[in-house]
Amino acid sequence: MVRPRGLEPPRDLTPTATSTLRVYRFRHGRKPECFIIGNKTLGFPIRSNARWQACFMLRCDALEGLILGCSMKRDCLALSLGGKSLAMDWLVSTEPVEYETALAQMEARVAAIRAGSEQEAVWLLEHPALYTAGTSAKADDLLDARFPVYQTGRGGEYTYHGPGQRVAYAMLDLKKRQSEPDIKRYVWSLEEWIIRSLASLGVVGERREGRVGIWVVDPKDGLEKKIAALGVRVRHWVTFHGVSINVSPDLSHFDGIVPCGLASYGVTSLKNLGVDADMQTLNEALREAWSHAFP
Image (cartoon, rainbow, N blue to C red):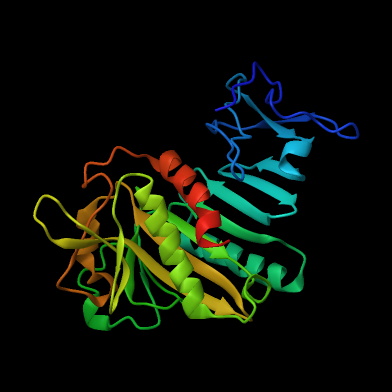
């Protein structure tokens, strides 16, 4: 990782002659560890006092692009990169986001992407404990409504979201990304994204015919268990909703539902598999694997 001193830009990235380095300060109670864009760790630890954070805007030849903005709100860090090979936003929320809030923001972003006023985006977040019901959900699969239950327009059945689970919402324009919009191909790419991300953490994730999601073999008992779920919706060929990966959730929370309608199979997590990975580690793995799954 590039480690600048104080609030200096990374040493191996030289601003162009017409560029300037600007430092923006925001009141913020939390401190991001680093910013990772493309194949470079352009981000770096922010060294500042407890009351202030700093953000950088830097144009550099090495990235052939411009970091268009870095905005820190109360619970969300947003980075934008526009260049020859990438034009999308990566959003990371550092505090749990209520489901209805997330849905409203996704709806607004999808409309803006279709209108051409916003870039595509991937949003990494966690939700407070809740259940969501997809368009194929069966009432009998809700065993214990111990948490709020939300009806949603995504595909699939019941699933759980909660602390310790990385949710990744992908808002992409399939008309621009594919020669012919193909939802099956898009779902395959989401699966590949998860599989490659898990592989970088030493976990073998696999597809299974007739079973939605990504599956692993638990070495403790030799049983196949789900570690990641998928549920998507497409409106005017712009995608939203996405995937969820179990990092360290309370797995007993899944007992209130039949996850994805598959009563014969259990769920697991990176923690349960003995993998020492936190959200930031998974975030980096997801970012690194993206270009392989969505070239």
